[in-house]
Amino acid sequence: MLNSATLSLEQAPPISVPFRFFLTAPLFAAFAGLLMIYYGEGLFVSRWMPSTLAFVHLLTIGFLAMVMCGAMMQMLPVLAGVSVPRALLYASIVHLFLIFGTLFLVAGFIYSDSLFFTLALFQLGVGFGLFILLIVVTLLRVKVKNNTVKSMWLAIIGLLIAIALGLLLAQSLISPFDGFRPAMMTDLHLSWGLLGWIGLLVMGVAFQVVPMFQITPEYPQSAQRFLPLALLISLAVWSLGVVYEVNLIQELSGLAVIIGYLLFALSTLILQAQRKRKVADITLLFWRIGMLSIVASAVLIALGKLFPEIISQSEFTFLMGGFLIVSFALSVINGMLYKIVPFLTWFHLQQRNLALPREKRVKLPNMKTALPDRVARRQLIAHITMLVLLFAAIFQPQWFARAAGVALFVSSMMLWWNLIVVTRSYRAYSSKLLRRAAGA
Amino acid sequence: MSAITESMSADHKRCDELFAAAESTISEENWEMGGEALSSFIAAMQHHFKMEEEVMFPAFESATGMTMGPTQVMRSEHEQMRELLVDLEAAAREKDADEALGLCETLLMIMQQHNVKEEQMLYRMADEVLPGSEVVSEMQSI
Image (tube, rainbow over all chains, first blue to last red; front, side, top):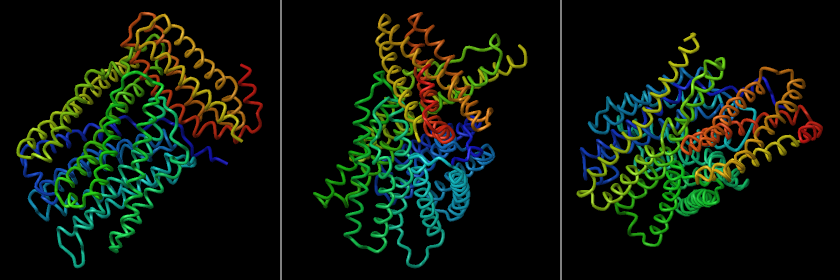
């Protein structure tokens, strides 16, 4: 029997809970752009360059994790029927710790200073630790087990492992310890962060939102039920293979991970092609770029198997990172923001509007009045330009690196500005509604 | 025991498809066909709300004793959607495609997040507290 008392279909947390994360994230991506302008081709020398690591973490923690944290606190009530306890308080703490933690981490890399690393370790440890605890406590209260809830469990496990490994790596930079293998730990850290946390969360969300918002057929039930778990297990087995240096296990489980994500990307593209909804949709375009990037990274790995000599080249690593971090994760999340932010704006305003007597109601902007398609499309074009320049820079850094940095900065600031415009319209209508409620 | 979940989720799907048809005629600015597609979509929505508000919600409320719980939230979201449908009809009458498409986008978002809550929570709870098929047949007779 479902325990009805614990099931609240209550509305989402206050709008400022997710918005603080969403409005901060693009600034970190813009900061990454500035870093690329400053360092230019120096960023493309090797993945181990401190400036490159700083750049990557501005995107992964500053942008990706930042949005994901806000989105999860927002989505849990809708998709799982439970609200996050004391959301406003905890959101402010997590948000601040993530901001300062990311900044200290970046400073730590750039100045190779152990004081900064210590501060980052503390801030990110507390910020992510609190976030994980919050989500786990909330998920434990969920009575309805659906596939999205299961994916969220798996993704939070992925995050926990990625963060734990990241903290260990930071600790090793402060004071190296015996028997620590930083290169191996880094591979594990980034694999869990990208394929355990971000990938599984995107997958869980996609199972819900792709059929919903494009009106496509559902993903196959078996895929929804087993794919995320199979991926997490494969990733765990792969990690053991890496730690104990068992080549066969690494190869087989690595192959399973690649096939799993390839199946996900291809089925998403196929479902999107069968969509009943025919109108042009900006978010859909961002998602298609993201899914094609997964396919491209799988092709790249296949090429690496056929021609093993290319794997050791730095271009190979940069291409993988470019496909997975930038053209997959960044695109998908950028696209998602264009649905979430205008919708939440409208939703919160309209609830208050309907609470007013009819004659006092205000005509509210709909989602596309708040954020017109042409405005979002301009940012999409900037984003695509950035991707083209970034991939060009991987092969010709001295020609394209700074231009790619400029494009990343411009595209991120355009995203930020678009979200600010929506938020300002929220503020304006919100005070109008307050005045109406007060009698004006 | 999933009679309510199955039949009502299928009705959501029907509404989704009528929505897609209506939206695409609006985006082509095909107002003659659009009028018809839009009316059948709106009729399907009104029918769905009616089935829930007049049959299932009261039955659920009397079976559980919860009148201010989940059904109340669902009713308030129906209200939000009804308002959008009124605006959408007006925009289509004025042949304002931009406004109508913006309203469609907004409507689809609220419809879908509403459907998730119903399909994955409320209907399942309803199936548990209202076993048997009376509620379903009563809803279908509306």
